[in-house]
Length: 296
Image 1 (cartoon, rainbow, N blue to C red):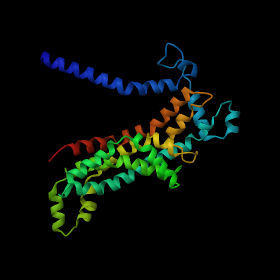
Image 2: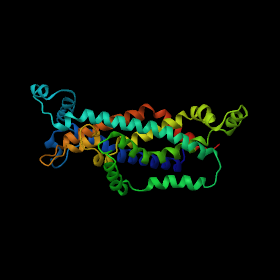
Image 3: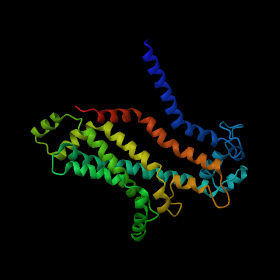
Image 4: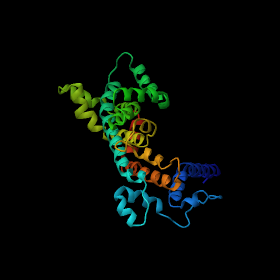
């Protein structure tokens, strides 16, 4: 092996290790911190690994979410209000994320198909404007959206959060799917049109079935972006019936006390579903992104 190749491999592995430390390191620290006692988190110097390992934060959240207060007290454990509503908030986050993923893929597919296949005046301007809309900071739109939701009586409602998240996720979905649809050979559509199929039938019977990897990738992207949304969930929700997991995790910090260990443990639990979702559909994510990046 030549010297230049050795140096290249060394630099590649060093860059990979640095990349891994930057992106995976904070998550590993979060897991370690969630297993520490409160006094260990605030001590100086800080301890990366828990010694001893403590499950008190997880027990507080899980016991409070699954059992009533009388049972928790008999087990000599504490249970806060935030822990008791954490399971409901978890389900609310799942409902919002799954709904956004489903409807974004459905609407995004039918919006992306004509952009990918039809030639019409202003096509590129339309595609560019879709992306420009998403580039507007969410914070700049927060006040008018919240005021409009309250005037329409749609505050403290999961449906409102679904619509808001879809408005931010749908441009990404359209861009991803229109790139994927372009990789499907046009000869298949020509053959279907010779058999008498119209555009709608072609999309339903040919394009969408052949685009399962791309649709899955778009759905996972929409799910991940919606699951961790915090700003609008904090501004729209007012009662425990609509709180999301990110909002409840922040509620562990009160005016009287800040339970750092419990906040971190709640964050770890909130990360598990999207990570598991991404790992389970990893094959579709990779194939969808790579197929959409290859031009025939």
